[in-house]
Image 1 (spheres, rainbow, N blue to C red):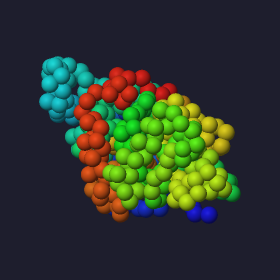
Image 2: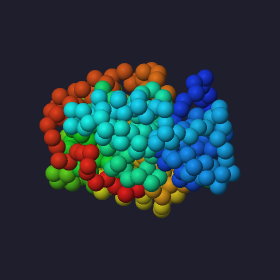
Image 3: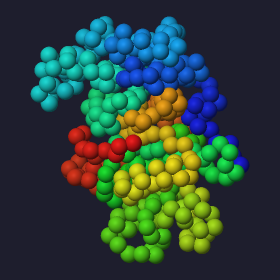
Image 4: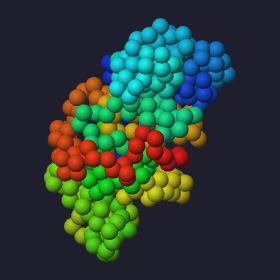
Amino acid sequence: MTTILNPVELLKATPSDSHPVIALSEGSDPRVVAGALAAVEAELANIILIGPTAEVEAALEAVGGRVVASGLSVHDPEISELSDEFATAFYELRKHKGIDQEAARKAVKSPLVYAAMLVRCGHANGTVGGAVATTSDVVRTAIQVIGMAPDAAMVSSFFLMYPPKNAESGRAMLYSDCGLVIDPSATELAAIAGASAQSCRTLLRSEPKIAMLSFSTMGSASHAAIDKVTTATAALRAAYPELSVDGEMQFDAAFVPSVGESKAPGSQVAGQANVMIFPNLDAGNIGYKLTQRLGGYAAIGPVLQGLAQPANDLSRGCSAEDVTQMIAVTVLQSQRTDDGDKQPGLENLPNFSQQLRNLSQCSKKNPNRIHHDAPTADH
């Protein structure tokens, strides 16, 4: 059985000379502080804890930590020497929306905005929030401040799913979208799958085998919901013919080799899929929680994809270990960004996203796509 490495283990196994900086916007939350200390002690990253200085220091003291000059620092947006720089940059960024300079100065005192500005202005490589803030706030801030990647068709999310350590069989998988895009169109579903292929290579270090999930396998049923999945599969194949993708497919056919052989004979994906693309947020959110709670899989996420620089969301029910893992995810994403996607097989993905935009005319407003103020799944 192939050794499965979670993000922290993967980062430890692939040491780098770089010293990434990750900004945590909820620096006084005890779970965030404990997770940050673990990340610093493991030399995963240098950490900036953001919040009122007295509150952050009290949280550090409560978990037995302290500010380590070489690895951990505290930024209080109310008194930070970077506030003027950030206010000017935020004003230039948002003045087309009618924001004035006074509003910009007030905005960058928000820990979420301050953390995103650290990334945008080059003071940090990524940011993590959501232990207290809602997913909507985290995603909206990331899109407004950090912005979308130039090659991205949209912003979406995924969960990394890891089998129990004592399991005799199983594999790490990527589930998408389980937290953000409520009811994607066929072309948006293809865009989510394409971005997930890239994320699979970055975080699972595996060649993606993508199953486009439905309640039907290879035409066993007929319905408009199935048509959406088959159209998405065709769009993905047309844009990126070298990608291993199949669908529509039921989960058992995608996951269990014997079932895949029976229901989808000859498929290169059936029974061995490691990227599961769900048709909508209902299916995805329910699916990852069933896998986690009944199957005993560890779920790390929601991880965001499609942003210009890494920004990730935590569950409000997260543990300190979840925080440490998400820091590791963010570091791995930042390494991919810094390296310019120098991984084999990634060179066609920017063109792929452009093709998807052309196919779907994504510039038109789509009510099914996540918007800045839209509700998202409660994790």
